[in-house]
Amino acid sequence: MNITNSQIHIGTVYIYSGPQGYVVQGWNSGPEASGPSGSRDISGNIVVGPSGSRDISGNIVIGPTGSRDISGIVVGPTGSRDISGNVVVGPSGTSQ
Image (cartoon, rainbow, N blue to C red; front, side, top):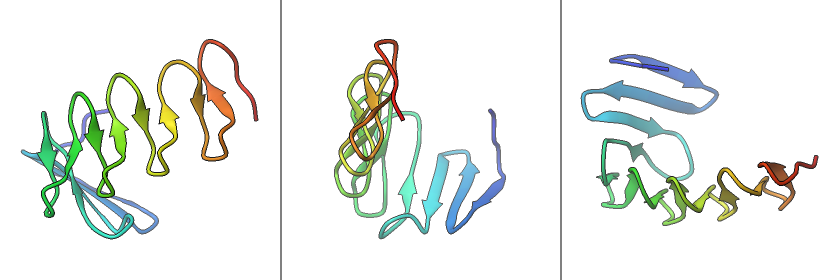
């Protein structure tokens, strides 16, 4: 999906897009910004990038290997898990 210079409201999460990427407000304790590589939020934390991106708490959230959600749970193509630790997505099996 390609979003340019638009605004999406999802509950209390606001996603703004523009030339430098996205700014997310109302999620956890502060805004997150995205961009093509090593983008940072207003606190200087890397939040979105091609590898080892992090959320505002320092957890890896986006990347091709070993991505994690905000609780530190691994999300990826193999053995992905939900916040309870159950495998939900991956070629090796799924569970509810």
